[in-house]
Image 1 (cartoon, one colour):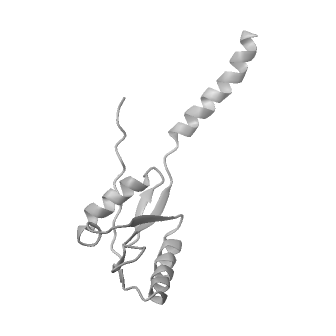
Image 2 (image 1 turned 60 degrees about the vertical axis):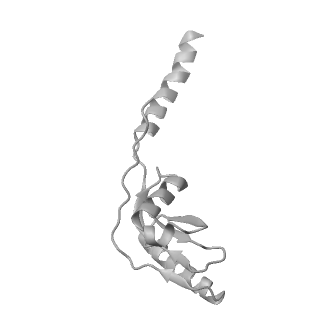
Image 3 (image 1 turned 180 degrees about the vertical axis):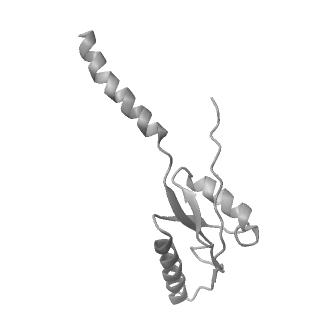
Length: 123
C-alpha cells in the first residue's frame, strides 16, 4: 500500500513543481477610465505586463503612470490581450463605440511602458 501511494504521489509532486517554476506569460493591457458615463472616457496606451498581475495591481500601476487621466476616474477597467495587435485594434474599436454614444474619448498616444513584476510577499 505504501509503495502504491508513493507511486501516485511522486509524479504529482514533480508536476506541481514544474507548474510552479513556469514564468507568467507576457500579455498586453490597457485601462479604460470613466467608461460608464464619462464625462470623458480615458483610454490608456497599450502596455506590456504579465498574467501574474491582478486587476487591482494593474489599476494601481495605471493611476501611478498616468495620474492626470486616472486619478479622478470613477470607473476604471483593465482589458487584457495575448498580442499587441489585438490590443491596439481593441483600443481603436472601443473609441469608435464610445463615439457612437456621443461620449468624448481621450485616446492617449502610445508610449512604451512595461509594468514592473510584482513582488511576492514572503511568508
